[in-house]
Length: 324
Ligand SMILES: Nc1nc2c(ncn2[C@@H]2O[C@H](COP(=O)(O)OP(=O)(O)OP(=O)(O)O)[C@@H](O)[C@H]2O)c(=O)[nH]1
Ligand SMILES: [Mg+2]
Image: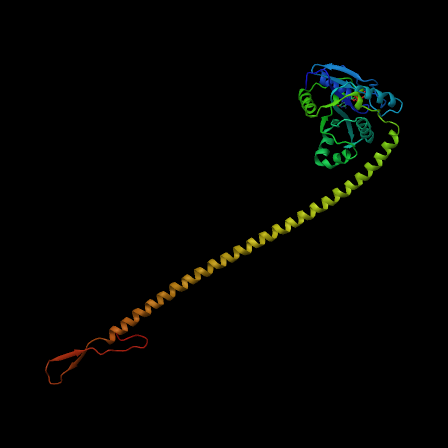
């Protein structure tokens, strides 16, 4: 935040959204009137609070038809101070959905400006349940944002503080305060001079809110169909995944069986080979024995009583082996 006094932090939005409470939180004091206003708006005039580095401006909301014209004037005047602005709209959610008149308020105020539009949104008083809903299904919020004429540069979810309910109290939680300041820092600053601020057109406010309501209904229907289709697609993808996983397991099992059979075959083959080698060895020994037997010297008696004798080898040829 710059220390130039012409730096303005403007809080905008409908009655009861918690603008004044947030301003008080930033100042650390109950400087802005806040409390239950039963929809008509407690802040009826813009309130300017010097807060060191910058000036905070708390503005009234446009929801109440009786005070709308006056409120629009107050807002316009707050934007005509010729300086550097950070615009922050504050809105709440009902069961996770926006109020369409909050959207219309943002649209008409921004439409009155003829400068590059940059702003931030605070979703205020968000209960843990609604927060979970937003996190689980971000398309619900993006569906709401589609109704906006200009998209926000930054958004911040500010949690619900029970002690604030129907009460003029301070949000003193230091972590929240720090995060809030960080969020504000992240919003781009825009220079607005009074010539860039036109009249806020509140003429057909009610009709435009009804139109937005219809558009929102249509978009929600489309969103529901889309969510159902996505769920169906996710289910089908999951089923397919299960089938594929089963097939992969089956294939692995078949492969394992094949390998086991192959190992068995190899074992049998090497056993057969060993047996055949042993048989061949035996046969060879047998052949050698037979050959040795047939090549024994033959003793021939001379028949004359002489003891002279002679011997010779008779080559024997055996089937299947050479006589050598
Ligand atoms: N339950 C709950 N109430 C809150 C919270 N923050 C603010 N409030 C209450 O909401 C009511 C409206 O708050 P304000 O800050 O006055 O709202 P505002 O936007 O300035 O309203 P107007 O001045 O009427 O335009 C007050 O009673 C606050 O105490 C919160 O976090 N939770
Ligand atoms: Mg107020």
